[in-house]
Length: 572
Image 1 (tube, rainbow, N blue to C red):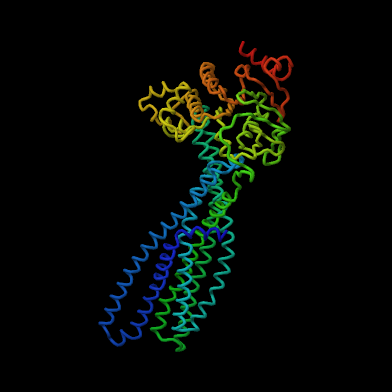
Image 2: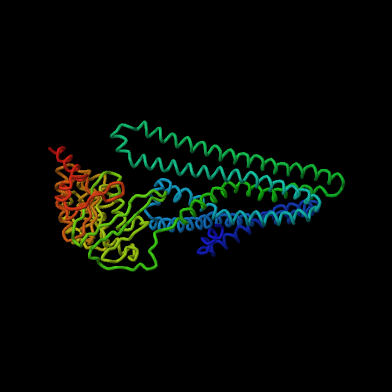
């Protein structure tokens, strides 16, 4: 993991080197003041060299001005290096997320993923900037300060340095607690983000059912867990800082007592003793910097571990034998196909059927029976565990997912529209389509006239998830998108079940038009919409229990006939 983290510095070697040189210069300039102080106390002041005192003071002003410029560079360019690394990681994560299978999103909430892409990466960026800089400054300063202090009095220096192992041991012990606590804290942040995202996205449902108290209760539960996690994190951090601060305070006491004894015994003069008292901060400064950095280090490491966790999730992969296909004809065959959840629970069992190109194949049956999962196997959203699926006599695994999905159009009950213009949402079906093609697709979906009645026409922004449109208008936009894509294979997954009867009739006309000449798989709740399908299959508990035409299934007087009669009675 450390090697992977270092790899993100490669594009920024120049800035990193300059940042390190600037940090090194700042560290070295820090020792100038005690050197000048010792020189003045031992030589310039006793010998009354006032001109040299002024020159020495002016030189310090100049050096501190240079130090200010170096600090500006470190803060500005160093942070920008971290930002660029963060941007690179965010881009890589987004591209990786785009390649992950449906199963990943089944098991991970949107808010948690967003938390990893925002707050976690921000912590990583801070570590990327301050990590090398702090380690270099503290390391160089500790070495230089030890060397300089040794030139003043080696024995007093060794006494001070002997306290360092105590600080290291305590820091390492308390650091483990801090790391565990901050991991828990970041997990709590991700959870509260997930709850918040869910609550805001569902605010209309909350208001419709007057359940704001319930959502507040859920939020407060997550908020309490977050506060509890932060409490543990800050408790561990408090223990770390208080104990390590006490140890650094002891350093000053040891210097005061030891130096006083050395002065009393004539082992050090007063000027050198005064310089040593001032110079000890050269040693304590980087130690305190390292201590303060530990919190940031823990956040950054925990964030990078969570980042790597996502990046190590296996993306969708084409098989070695997969090849691109052009426009498919649309012959589909399932041969003894089975599929399971990641937990090992079987969803589909030994499914077999075939659909000729241009025909309509309908799937009916109770909810949770496996109809939607079966549809999702065709565009390879989920993998089969046994059997084989063929399209145009080509095994599905031998077709690249990109070219396969270019041949499939999907209209679902749960439509997703982007918060952009109507034109952009239709263009999603074919990004390089002309304006004329977009308008033609809208006309075929019977939504062109409505679009033109809007003040901004095709440039109208429809809001998040198309909130400014009715259910029927959303569905028509989705149908226009598929018309524009013009695929040979069409999947209609309960595309009209959420609509009222009048709107359903209108949408069904558009869907019938869309289905002409295409191999169509229909998942239907209302059986009246699939009476004319070329073949109908009843899917129950992951198996096809009945199959045939509408008339043949009615004659069987089985599940389909019972469902049809029940719906007919409800309509009557």
